[in-house]
Amino acid sequence: MLRQIIHIDEEKCNGCGLCAAACHEGAIDIVDGKAKLVRENFCDGFGDCLPNCPTGAITFEQREAPAYDEAAVKRAQEAKEMNEMKHEHHEGGCPGSKMMQFAHKEEDNTQTSMAKPASRLGQWPCQIKLVPTQAPFFDGAKLLIAADCTAYAYANMHEEFMRGKITIIGCPKLDMVDYTDKLTEIIQNNDIKSVTIVRMEVPCCGGLQRAAENALRNSGKFIPWQVVTISRDGNILD
Image (spheres, rainbow, N blue to C red):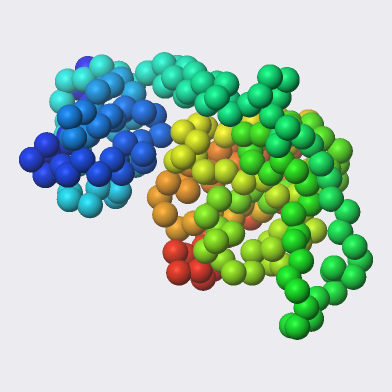
């Protein structure tokens, strides 16, 4: 079929691998030191890889190519995730993923400028991939869905965003997975009172925002929600 797909100019490509990392679908590999579109049916033609290319080697083109196979992409992502979990988890489950809820002391909630900063993380685990879809800490929770990098870019993340919320974090670029189904289950199966999405301004964070918005829509619930975008130099953009 005739459709839009990416084209990689091998003469311009320096083999940095940023495009392969940015491609959520896994369509690009580094072969003999050059980026190559090795799975045309995995390329959705949206071009998440374009802004990550430092040499301008990637462009769009209209040509004959296999249709985008979303089901195959999802199977490959799930297989990759399962393979990673086999390597990371001990038999019987990873001890580091044991569910915990934290009860912060009341005095921790009255900081002064001279006080030692207090953690506002309310539970463990906090990674979207590891957190259970049902847990006591989700009951009546204000849910914060945050991109990994936001806590490093925004200095007051704990006080302004995490305080009083249950925080779950992820990076669709590094995890190479669509969080929609997992987030949908969390919102459907628990009494979530509100959802705040905190993302970085970079394009790959759009995957986290889309997954959260789709989950809210799929849940069938009417829940107040908002999106906050953090700039790379640590400021709130909207």
